Length: 305
Image (cartoon, rainbow, N blue to C red):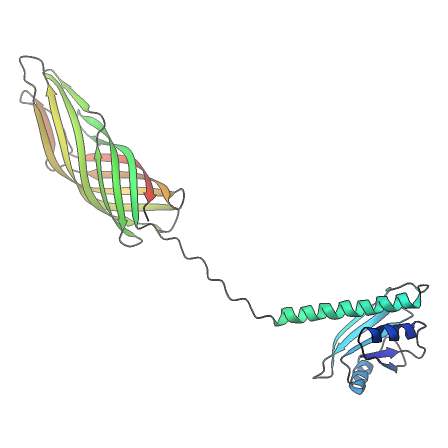
């Protein structure tokens, strides 16, 4: 390393030279006219001594100047002036140790900066894959069906199994039954009505199938069985019959995902019973059911994947 001294060497120079030597530096001292030295004076001294590192102790500023010269271009690459490093009345050996430690800390910091600047760029992190809707879902819920007429609304429990053919299209198989009988009253007695149905539908997700909230539409058909159990006082007779109907329907539903595996769905559908269910007492028509038929339900859906 090269050390540039002014016309008069500082009083602590012998101690500084010894401290630099004991720290492993091969010291080459040169005198310059003024301190701090000019860039050209630094580059000339570096070429003459073949030294890339250099310092200039500044007794007037109680500090030190540190620089680095690019060994390839022989141009000044780094320069730092540190003032107020010591007190003028401090011991020469203390001043020398402080200067050498400052030099060592500066070189270590520069080495760390160089390593960081030459570190290979981090490989790009692939964005997380979009969450796809589950392939298989199981739904459990309850709802009610309504048709104009005296029978009115019928409540039911529902169970469904869904299979996603694609992220937007899915097949749904579902069925329902009434937990309690509905009743229709006439002068001749009472008719208890039980209803159960099963069927399939094709659904299409209108909105983003990966979103937490989704809107779906679809169409399908149910096979409906409505059982009528008549209870009549004498002289009328009790009678029991079942009516099988096909119910083509269209539906619209909304789904809200609570977790990755659990969500809540709300469905509404409109259909027509073919044939309609007719209820009569003693040969007199009391009501017709299923023309049209409206139904709504709430479902708790879970993923089976």
